[in-house]
Length: 142
Image 1 (cartoon, rainbow, N blue to C red):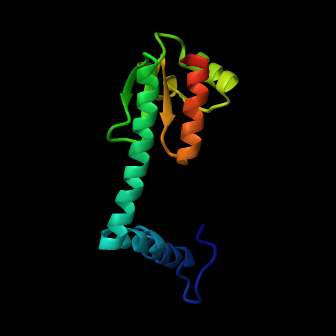
Image 2: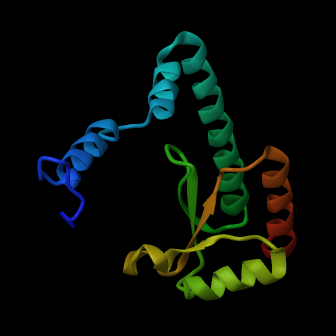
Image 3: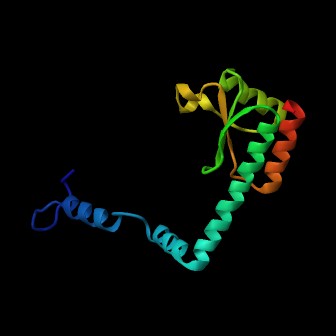
């Protein structure tokens, strides 16, 4: 709306829009500071330690499902492992894992028709939680 005007009659909205788009055009200061921290030697090493931590979680999850004979994709260069359940509806598998293992996965059908029959398992978690999840999965499916 152009109802609010300066004393000369020009709308305040035009200047307000210019200020807002200039001030908020791009990443916030805290995000920029985080990005700069990652390119320092210390920040880069800390970031890679975290990446490697989650990659190890992926390896544990992949090994768990592979050892149990499941079809497994991903988890090598991404923090998610896709597990096939022999053509079963992904929502049924999700519900079964939730009910029997008390674990939350993501039904593959949420990613489109090609995800049907799969669940996605996240490696974002504490190592002890991942190890506990693996134990529960092996108790039910192993």
